[in-house]
Image 1 (cartoon, rainbow, N blue to C red):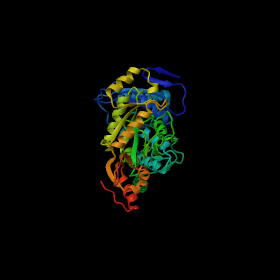
Image 2: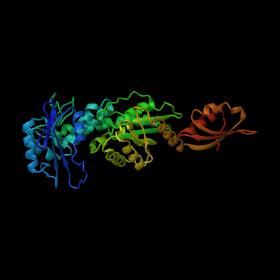
Image 3: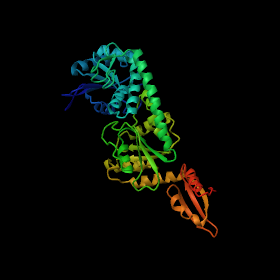
Image 4: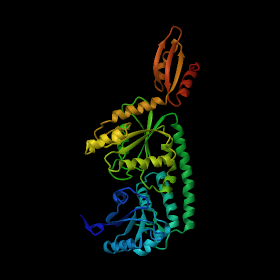
Length: 432
């Protein structure tokens, strides 16, 4: 049960208690600039129990403590009242601000980037994801080593993390740098393996799901491919990339990849470390931008995703915009307004499957836009090759002439190579 006391909202009971701190920075005119809803969701995902919230509109950032002296004192009183294990800031703190706040508050202080790193550390399952998260975590922790928190736990990872001290491994900066070098070399080897895997798929049409975290990408992945990807109503439930072939009611060989959800203020080191994972998106021929149309800040989430795609150099790839979760929308007029503002968007529900067929057809249309037009003359005695050609090419017209069979084709990437290999076995060169 949450109760209110002055500027604070708090819970009567908790296990790992946390106080959340949000600010509206100078120049931020958004009415939701001090909203802590998303930070609250992140904290819960990281298994913290938010017991109080404090917000402030800043005219300027204090270089020493981030907040003004009055707010710092208010926060200190809140920590004395609630005895939290951690105070979580919604903005990135400098190493100095982190240290000064810990001295004043006498408890652990972390910021939003570190909280996201904690969640990624918990959710990483594959060797690649674990290595990427560990590298990002160490790079972020390196300048933040303090006497109070200068140790890392191999089980949950480190500075400012819960359960820190399980192994109490003391690491100084030199040791951390050595570990960073090892992890970077390890990632280079993993990246080579990834490139080999992507090279084997280069002749296939590749589609990648992108979007804000918890918008339903994994649910859509399951609907389109019949995969059994983990689906949970929580932030970053899916971290490791999944690649599957679209099978259900689909006429062409298309690979669909489900990648990590994006989020506002994503740590730079995490983006850099996840290069090989994000290459699954960079290598795509088509992106499906999934949006939770029911979220009250869906447009802001769309902008965050678009901005991150630009940062990662993926803004030139064709995009299909998808409004998901229309079965949960309360006011149909809100959906109509969204469709009017974004007329190219396809509205779907993974739960009721409304709009899924329309999305499949849109993918087919995009696929066919990438096909290469080609004409081929076959002798009548080679008519048996037509069924083999259909397996990798779209035959749009068959014209049976007196002296030959003229096929009008549309070839996918790599299709001409397959056609030449087939014809070479018959000693017949391909011709336009």
